[in-house]
Image (tube, rainbow, N blue to C red; front, side, top):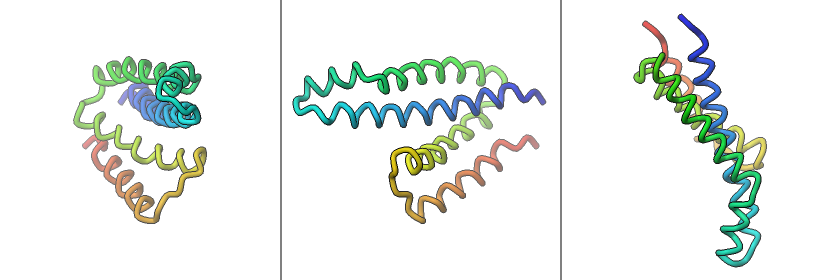
Length: 120
């Protein structure tokens, strides 16, 4: 088994998470302006918006590479790790609260991903 495609898949998940956090930061910065037009221009000139944009371009290219080597039935469920990393990163970087039910859901998702990506 070649581990490189799986490492690339993990980069896809991590960059997707970073992109989501960056987009949240970009919108927080653009909401400080009062007018909608100011808000849009503030968003477009935000470094966080461009981090999001570039990360998603890279994620798309890497995803195409992953799809050439890992079965879709294993690769796609692994993207569910985004539903794990985004709340964890939001908890640490955005100081958002994560409820007990969310922690339980995160544990279930991790378990599910492990079960689905196993190569029998």
